[in-house]
Image (cartoon, rainbow, N blue to C red; front, side, top):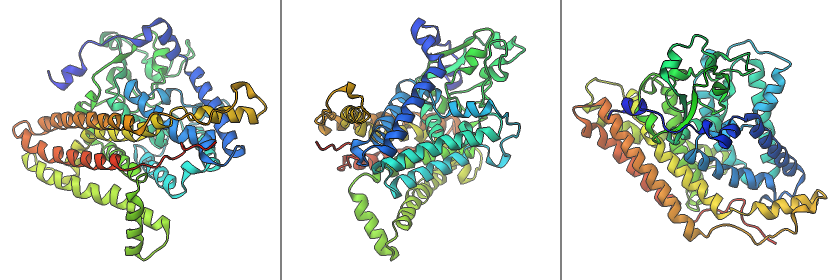
Length: 475
């Protein structure tokens, strides 16, 4: 079975048709309201609560529980957190008073703004130790709300979600290996539809269409899909479903999709995939003990004591130099097997998406470690916060609770990493077969070696003692 045939096969069960689950999934405002309430609690406690990170809900929930639950949800279900995004409620409130008519600048379309902000967040997280600062974490949340409202108040559509939001870009990439997808139930129904309400909106149902510009019958995969299900609410034929699929399937499909185009022609998508993958290694490296010795060596070699400069060099090595050497070498070797003579960057663009499942595995192993080892640490912090607010309804803080032992968590980490690596090897083989049908193995081997080398690096990283950021509690 070819990839296109696999993606075009009969759909699986429709989760939107399930009596309770379907109605809950379609209540986007409910989930956004709940997440907004949680955000307000985190902001207030971050500013006014104790400034010891393990005893503040802002740092604990954001950097331990939210990140772990985010990647777990992406792996098990899909881009549910974007569906429940609290930043959209203030944005929509602003849009009640002003209707943006200006289009997002052409030079800023695509993923480059989001990639830049993603790297900026990783950099500031390490430079300012955001995980250890409740007030700084709350400030980041407030600034995020302000940025979302400002961008989408000035420009039509949803440029913040599609091009700017670094969390959204993370979710878009990771959701390519999710087991669920929003798609049309019957292509014949779409062929006879003249209104295209899934894209343009439905005034009778008071439902807007897809703000990220995905025309459902021509949509391929989860890229740029926020799972908002506006298309399902707008479709007059009830022809939209949330159904199952093979995780990672879309990474092997190079059809031109609505709003996205062909992956093999999108250098910005490849850049996002690579920053996502190498950023996973960088973020994990920042939490193990060898990073301090490495940074000290860099400082001595550069003759500087500036942490910002040393950290900038480290980011340059991991996000620029290392990918250039590994991917440039792989592209130089594999392009000899391709039927057409292509530039190195073009070859990298075509194979880059094969590394995404490995990147997901690293993020899941890393964030899963913090989530599982600090699983219940929010309980005493919430109890203390409620008591401090004059509402001792949650009882006396139980400071002794924590999470799973590291000896239990580490096999789970390695399992997630191994699964991601295997999926990457499968996707890379499919890409090599598509690009070099006569010399598939020759095109595949360099990229398989890169994937295995990155996996080995991740195994070493995850085997190191990792900082228990935000989870060590004292009574």
